[in-house]
Image (cartoon, rainbow, N blue to C red; front, side, top):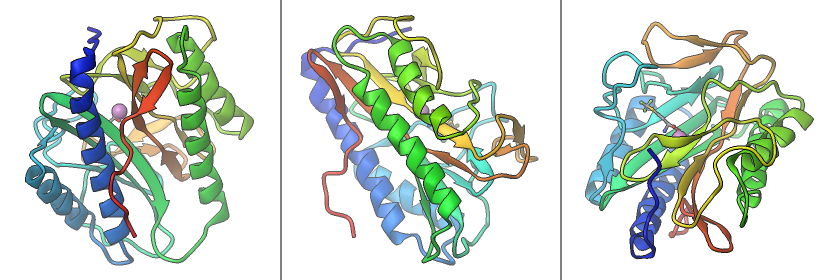
Length: 260
Ligand code: MF3
Ligand code: CO
């Protein structure tokens, strides 16, 4: 199903986007060496509930996971890529951490992910990989202009990732959002320009380029949720929710507050 928001509903989508972005940036600023993934999950829970949001994850039980996710945020560390279950793990200096959060507020969902390095270390290969996913995300957003199709977004994302030297996995990608988190259209992280569903104003899309350093193969942890690279290489993930407007795309998951 594809939902199209009316112009009157767009302010609610902006509110949801701002909530998700502010929570992610607050979590990033609080995360230090020694922070436990379970602390991050509890902080996310408190902030989402205090802001009147509801989690898209707690009761979510898709075919690609084992039972309800049961937590507020995905925390994927180092070789974990997507859907990292927040477990009892204190972060170390130089760890790579992806946080992925989706929340509904006033009936509209926003979904966003950020990846960053914990502590003072600056592992060059990880930073380059994070930057590639961020540039791919911006290219995908820029490709979502008037007259564009899903294939134009996929192609723009995939071109940046491949030129940066990363293999692309198409098992998981971007998606429509609306009153629920995962809707049509599916947006693979590579594709052919001019193909697929034609964008129209009021469509909300979550674009989410992600890569593993040296492989396209995923393996699932014993926890039934956390996806890791098959080689043990690190991975990165960047995601925004955007609204298609008459003259391009508006990023909804932008922070409204200053975060240290
Ligand atoms: N928010 C993720 C995405 O970007 C999906 C997480 S599903 C969960 O599409 F169940 F793991 F939370
Ligand atoms: Co998503």
